[in-house]
Structure formats: structure tokens, C-alpha cells
Amino acid sequence: MIGLDIGSKTIKIAELERSGQTFRLRASGVVGYKSTSPEKMNDDKELVIMSDVIRKLCKEARIGTKEVVVSLPETQVFTRLVKFPLLTDSEIASAVKWEAEQYIPFPVDEAVIEHQILDRKPNSTPPQVFVLLIAAPKLLVEKYIRLAEMAKLETVAVETELIALARSICPPDQTVMVADFGARATNIAIVRNGNLMMARSIPTAGDALTRAVSQGLGVETFQAEEYKKVYGLSSSQLEGKIKGVLNPVLAMVTDEMKKAIHYYSAEGEGDPPRTLVLSGGTSSMPNVIAVMTELTGMEVVIGNPFARIQVDPEAAKTLMSYAPVYSIAVGLAMR
Image (cartoon, rainbow, N blue to C red):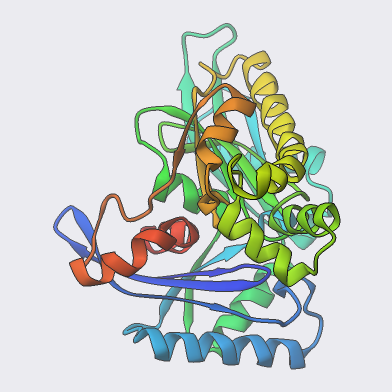
């Protein structure tokens, strides 16, 4: 199975095959592009550009199958944990659509609505069933399926980015917080025992960090991007100037994380997360673990989607430094 992660600036692809009870990485690849982000594509010309990029990536990565699971941008998807009385599975399936009307910010008849039963608590007062409600605009889903078809791929499923991340980088027996830093948005989630319990997307991410460096040091954007990658959050490099301008931006992100944890705890969903799992390109910045630990007060780790995947030793040498970038693509392919 192929996992296809279409970001706002890069496209990542991973092909996995089952090997007993585990997976083996057959192929992978990443490519940058300058086209409009796919969620804003409104004409065939843009779709043709994007499909050409995907098709070339598949060829260069030597992808061997056509069946693909595609991620939808978290900023365009609505995810919410809903509590139901102790209903049967079929009763919940019938009730989900009516419940969705109260929550989703677009008409139900224009949405694709899915749900996942996470937990049953027959002994709570009152007895409850916890259900994850996921809704996306039909036009968005159809656009991604069409894009895959134009790239000569067969879409077997679409998923949200955070559900894929929960599968690839989160421990199956803990409650953790996930922060996936993209270029334009940071997706944060609380994952319990591998199940997505809360999802939120905030418009502060890699581009905002680059702008902060550019404005703070008075340098061009391309140079600011290099400074961010090379010096990151180090106190000893460039007299800590890069860290000084990046810290306030990261503090805005961590404030949103704390709000999410507070809400999760106030709702009585379970023990709050003690570990923060980082993903995305920003997680590779120097000294990011120490700074995020200081800002959140949590244990911080870099998510490794290949931790449970068999990877050829030669390929591993190249992939390990870029592992967090592949977290969504790998999670999709593991579906």
C-alpha cells in the first residue's frame, strides 16, 4: 500500500508491504513544489501540475503499486470527540449524522461523515460511548480522489493527517500529545492508546518561524530558512539570536497545546498526556527537544515512523535524519 501525504510545500510518499506481523519499507520519496496548495486548487490546470509532480515522484521513488491512501489537510477537516448514551453500534451509526449537524461548520448534505467508536463505559454515571466524529467537505474529498486518478493511482481510502500520525508514531499503550509542524499550520492532537481523542490545527508553523528569523535579523527569507535549519534553537550559535526570535513563536504554539490539555482534562476524558511527540520538518531544528521541554514541562521525543518498520540498512542511513517528515505517509500506508 502507498501512503501519499500532500503538504503545502512538499509531497511525501511511502510504500509498505506486510512482513508477518510487521511492515517492510519498499520505497519512499519526497519532493518540493511551488504550486498552489491542493486545498486551494480550483481548476484543472492546477490539478494537472500537481498530478505530474506526483507521477514523477512515484517513478523516481520506484513505487511498485497503484493502490494509495491519501491524507486530507487537517485545516480543512472537522474532528470532534462526541459522547453518546450506551447505544448499540447500529444505533450510533444512525445517530451520527444528526449529531454532526450540531457541530460541523458546513451543511451535512455537502459532507462526508465518518465515525469511530473509541470506548464504551457502561459503569460510568451515566453510561456512555465515546465516538470520534470526522467530517470533510465532499468537494475536497472528490478533489483528492481525482488528483490521485490523474496521477494514475487508485485511491482506496482517505484519512486525516492526525489519524495517520497516531498510527505511525504514537505508542499503543499511553496517552501522548502530538505536534506536527507543517509549513503553514501546526496540527496538535491528544492520542490515547493509539486512538485520536482530540485534534486541533493552528496557523502558526514553519513559515511563521522563518518570518520571525527574517524580520528579527533583517535577512532574506531564503537565508532565514537556512539559519533556522542550521542554528535552530541553539543558545551558543550566533549569540543565541535565532533562538531569541523563535522562542516567542513556539510559545504561541505551546500555549495552544496547554489549552488543549486543559480542555481534555476538564472533560474528564482520562489522564493528561505527559509526553509530547514532535513531527514534521521543524522537529529537526537543533536543540528543539530542550526548548520544547522547557516551554511545555513535558517529556519531548521526536516521532520516528520507521521504529516499527523493517528498513534496508542502506536506506536507513539516508532516511533516519528525515524520518519525522515521513510520519504521515507511513501512517497512511500502515492503514
